[in-house]
Image 1 (tube, rainbow, N blue to C red):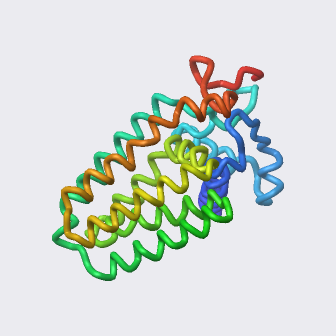
Image 2 (cartoon, one colour):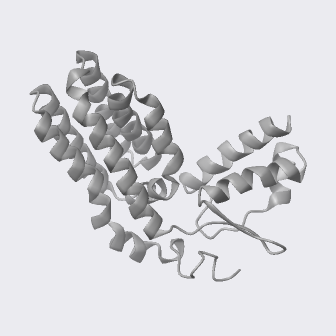
Length: 228
């Protein structure tokens, strides 16, 4: 029961942190979480220890626990990690591509358009991930996609931040449509070029994101909130 409770708490808090419902630098009240899940503090602490290993929370003995500020160095590492794996998947994808894949990608692009129109960055993000997952599922590498989701928490938070601007959503859609067009034409070399450009564009958005959200990023050497 303790392990089950800990996993439920971990999954819930991780989602709240990734989608910025819990802001970088925000203090986490362990007693509030215990009451919310109706458990002792032990499974709460277990969950927070896992989130600390994901670099999503900072824990200080006798002081407390906070959502970690976004570590830009780690974002670069995680971006490289995802790009390397997705490039590898796209290199083998031509042997696996099915017409149903293109139908799925078209559908997810339409969902993204609806989300962009309503300025729903979370719905857009989920449809974006669902679209990229098609390549991994089709090539039998869905576990690799799950690994990406598990190991790229800081990068994912940056992506959510970047999607707060409608022009960014529209640029994503244009790139996805270009990718779909290349796949339909079976121009796989062009598809890989588009995907590399698409997955690398976040680095050009970083400065603007920092200016818009200066309190969300690490300013101290260990990422502890300055007020802690």
